[in-house]
Length: 127
Image 1 (cartoon, rainbow, N blue to C red):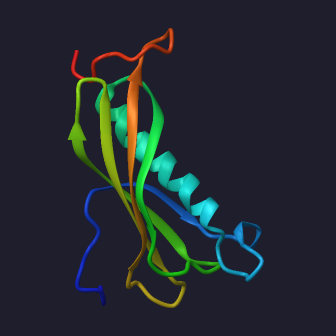
Image 2: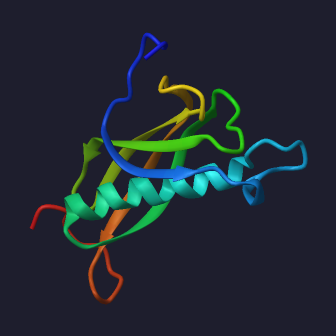
């Protein structure tokens, strides 16, 4: 990899950025990226909680570099904190163009989830 840094966490989503996902400037729309970050964080949170989870906060969201049509977008999840009913997940997004195998980090954020039961009430993550 050309970047000094490498992805931290578990690969939870890998997807191809398509033309329909662009903003008015022709780059990939930030909202599209955030939705995949939320989905990836939810995968990690529900796997850890072994139950449904709901997003309650997005903290420290940063778009570092643009994502282009045709890039492979990879979301890596790292659980950074587990509370009684909540989990905080750091998501790093890395992309790779068609002509290279080098990845570059394009975004990161922290997503907080609450574990819920069948009645949609919070419950302990570790039960």
